Amino acid sequence: MRKFLKVVGWILCVLVVLALSAVGVARVIAGRKYNTQWTTHTVSFPLPFPLSATELETLRSERIAAGASAADPLAGVDLQAVTLARAIARGEHLVKTRVNCEGCHGNDLGGKVLIDQAIVGYWAPPNLTAGPGSVTRDFSVADWDRAVRHGVRHTGQSSSMPTTEFVNLSDHELSDIVAYIRSRPPVDRTMKPVGIGPVFSFVVGFGSSALPAFSPDHQRPHPVDPPVEALANRVVRSVGRLERRHRGTRPPRRHGEHLLPHAPVRRLGEGQPRA
Ligand code: HEC
Image: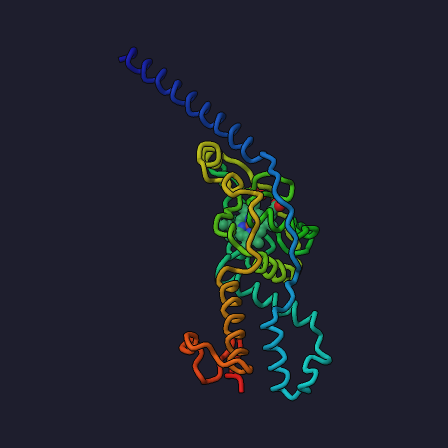
């Protein structure tokens, strides 16, 4: 019986040593992966994005409908303020309906502790507002691109933020999201850096997809407009061309007639058909 207990004791000791070694090895690999330095392209895009031709045209129509002079309907309009307000509204819509930055960074975007357990680790998305403790206060457009579409921190190291869903955001969308984040009131909150506990070590050290920086091509250019919007703009341009041909001196081509009914064509973004 004693001999049997001794054997069991030895087996347990070996198992504990093996488990501790595995955690140690995982911790070293995870640390290396987390500290990998990445070289990404340096993008640049306007913040906020200027109003598109369609948005300007809609604004002119709205102003004329509100009684402004048809010759210069934008006279007296603070176009910069309108541009920023629209970017913030689009960004808010994206954050609330698609990208949910607030779900992790807190409703006030000032940072939030998501995991704080010795066995797992410490995972607290940081403060994105401009208040004390902000990581993004001095961010350039390129830093936002790295953090959100590449999974790379402003320091150049891997980020543990799950960015796979954000990789295909267009410049326009990211610019709108940043305009919204910057419009939020500053929050005074400092989050501690991510802490790699045993479970984190295994997931990051032995998993292949825990750090998104290892997946995307960091030199691949991003779309400027969201794909659907780019398509919609092309359709609007084509319809405009057909409409001009229809109204102009040239008679519509026979084979194109079915595309162009005699009723006025409504452009995207316009509430009422054109007279
Ligand atoms: C699933 C949770 C989650 C979501 C959703 C999320 N984040 Fe994060 N974010 C994190 C975590 C965790 C970190 C800290 C990562 C680290 O330092 O390893 C982080 C870090 C950041 C950073 C700092 C990068 C740096 O340089 O240190 C920025 C900027 C950021 N997030 C922006 C955003 C934006 C913008 C969105 C929405 C488009 C977003 N995050 C959505 C979890 C999230």
